[in-house]
Length: 275
Image: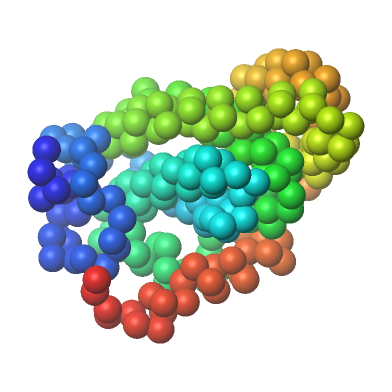
């Protein structure tokens, strides 16, 4: 499929908009999918779900991008960058779908670059600083396992566009989870220092598990994955704690605003620029 068809389904009305440079050169997973909202589907709720899932992906992608030139090895730098690009692609599709069904007609740039931190609805675990490599591995393991379980269910969504986005995402997230799991076992069952860091990372993630399970009912699937990985790595299973605050409701950490300031700086400085 030629580049002319990339994201064509979600870009109706914005054919001449070249502001977002990513996504070209890839097959459009939604080409030919009807964009009409099916009867019985609440367009407002659909848009809200797409924005929240898009925010999770965009913020996670930005954190992964921060490993560029800083990863332990070049191979891991490339892997993390590719995972981030997968998530960026998911964010594009989800934002575009939200703009179609929320009545605003906004394109993906509007959601990514021209909202403030208080308007984002990502889970808070995604916005925490990277910390060391162990923390980023544990976070990726948790978020990819959680997102994969949710996308697996969404692949049967009554909305055909969201179902197509989820089906494509399942393939990508399966790799993300596998990558993180392999590193978790390698570090947990590695040196005394790597084991110590992995235990510390699990403790850092624990307080945010409740938020994930409250956002989407996939606790059983995620716990099963985490138990399998931690047992293989010789690590303690993280403890589930009741929900305390929620990014889905607009509760933010102090870390999101600086992340967005960096992410959005060029677009806000040159709002009508094209490239």
